[in-house]
Image (spheres, rainbow, N blue to C red):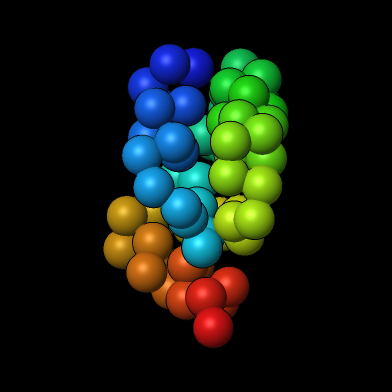
Length: 67
């Protein structure tokens, strides 16, 4: 997972990264959520981090942070 996320973050500059709601649905996934957020901070430090509640709210989540 770390390699896939890192490669995607390094592919080009990001204004906002939306993290999927599926990562917050169970206690077991808290560590995965932490890893993803920290990878974003490390490899896309200028990007805002948005959280969606599902696929249908991805655009809305990112739009809150993109000017």
